Length: 328
Image (cartoon, rainbow, N blue to C red; front, side, top):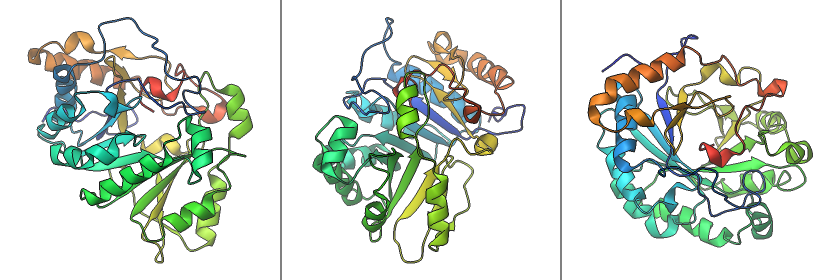
């Protein structure tokens, strides 16, 4: 194995978030309220071979988990081929995806057979009308059937992401808790994050995850120990519940201390942080296998400049226009 990717704050990077498209077919209020609009004119998204070279370089430097993101990653016709390719890489132990669930019902078994180990499905409301209002799509029943299909395909746990929005879904905590009482779902409440295009929405709808955290602790929920390749969620379990609760609170002071993930966009740019000020082009080094040493060196060189924090709590939002642009 090549040298483990590590930054100047001695954080090691076991986790790659790999975007394969920025196209999405939903119109979520907090991400793409006006729908997807192409913002680039180039040779297209990374090919399967280019993606393989990215994953291989990261795997050789200690990365054990790859999360496939978008946009909506399953809109790629070669999505199953991408899963199979990643599963063939030595050292990759977890292959996760984040999806809106649109194609999950029909494909859960095929994706599991191809090597997918973990699924996150975005479900921002358990009320079909509110789900439609937030996502712009009347697909609640389809997504719910997709989650059932994932369990039928053999996934032991499904993670469900819900972005908290004041005056929209923020009153649904009791309904969500009731939903996971007898289901092995890790329900992840994600605090709304301010991006470049969402200032007014953030001001109207931001709600802190701390209030939910306090409610959980007061009602007997206990925090679990975090694994080395886990994401940033604080995960809580309860003896009376099959499900778990995860809280992602990016405005918490020490949120970045345990950062263990890097991002590569669908156009081949390395991003140190979701809220960074720039991306570093890797694509010129993804054209043949012989360039892997140079690719590793470029990534490691950039890690020297990775900042200690995203500084969201100080009002810094970086260059990210919306979460779909580099995979959330």
